[in-house]
Length: 542
Image (tube, rainbow, N blue to C red):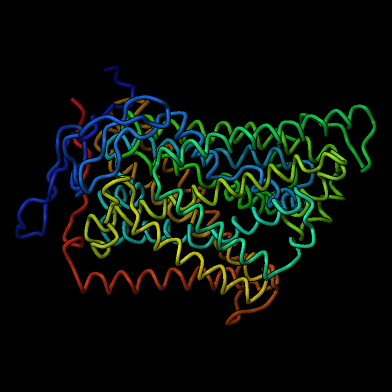
């Protein structure tokens, strides 16, 4: 192996277990080239069954997720859909243009940098430890159980916060796409359909990973096709001079993220991080993916690259067609700006873009459940959560108990927050940026700490295992601090209402963080086995 090439690691063939307690606590057994101690059950595969790719898939042994259920392309589709590209663009394009004007494509490009660096950390950590708990498992190994527990809690709570909103958007845009505008404006009907949709998507998750993958493959193709049609028509009308708004021809200078100034860039990057968030769902399926040590991580990295191309292209098209004044004026309407643009650009064919947003939110409703449920499963296997969360459906090989717990909690959160106000629902989404930045930053730090013995083996390991992830983490921590300062001002919240003298999004984030700490202490008192684990380090490559 070349000295400047990041060392490969071998995926575990079996689960290593904790050795007997010693004076300093429990010591984890580390196998050759891999971390140990996931506690997941691994047995001999039984008879083969068709997978989502039409190739044989081994049945899961009792108590284990279904191995080899999906392939690289399935994981890529799930990673893309988890970000909900059309919905994310619809939600951020107005506020982004209000902040940075024509430099919105450049800010989307700049936001890609920390995402790529953290995706690289996910890739290399997954090589060492292909565990569906991802950040929870990796941070526990590198930084200790308490930090790992809080990272896992953050992932679970992002799912709870966003699932209801995604389903609500899917219902609303779906009704608009079929011309049922009256039903879309009926709060009770929309709320009931949203709850039913969440339950349906959760049932698909429990039904089987292969079924979910096939469904996601169809949705990602439909979504991307609709976005391409919209962008192509918008750009054509700009150059043909047939647009109905204040069109402006695209320029290369739009790719300069610093054109609008430092403070505007900070706010824009926060929006960009939200837009890219979710690609790691592909890695949460690592135990169910063929070539689990490599394919999920590569799917996560390629997801960010595909998203970059999509976001920059659509941002160019939207800004060129609508102009900055129109988009900035629509900043407070969030995703509704795409409904207006659909009519402006496509006329009677506006259902194409409406369908894209509905499909995007629908797909993401399902894929966002995956990280939260798999993380809870991984935490329960390590005794960080009650054992019941580790239950796996014996016939389908899916984490049914944790999935339904995530579903139930998300529905309760959606209904309660939605009844408070639409603005409160938007504020809960804004709080997501804090949780996202937190656990992404932890993952980058964990990568550098876990591989610290290998960083001096050449420029490749130093950059890809250490400097890159740490730089990505530093950028996210900076954004986290800036976000906290911004959210402390109630005037910056969607509701513009002070909760305990602070902005509602910050209060929501602090409440969830505090609840996580309390639950961690309660669980530690009930069962301290997980907290006897000690941080480790990747063995030096031969």
